[in-house]
Length: 168
Image (cartoon, rainbow, N blue to C red; front, side, top):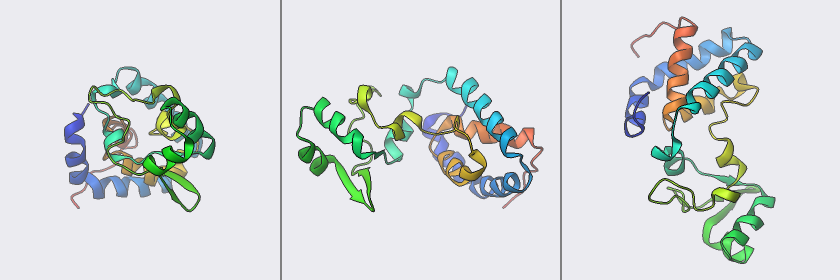
């Protein structure tokens, strides 16, 4: 598996290839089979991967909060919800986005300050175990520049599908 500090650079080298692979999958992959492949790879690779040693997602991905998640996090931090929102959240077209990157709640040891009540967007990232991956391939390609596990998933899928590497 690629090292967390090298994933962004490696992604840049094969970015066009990954977007070409996305098109390849859109045109050739069976939706149900692709979901099974992603789920299998997700279970296999995350079972042996320690995300706390990486946390690229916390450094480069912007967490989103559902409205009903704001109160529990504010309470956990012992803050009034309005103070929590003013300090940490920006509203954008009805979405509640974390203002800062890297995440304000990322501790120096790789743990999450709000682990017990972190938002669903964080708990489920990178979503590779969810159905309908064929329709979210753009996000998956983008996440492969953040998450070493997603990077590995795409590399394995390229082999499984016999995707021919080209120079771009």
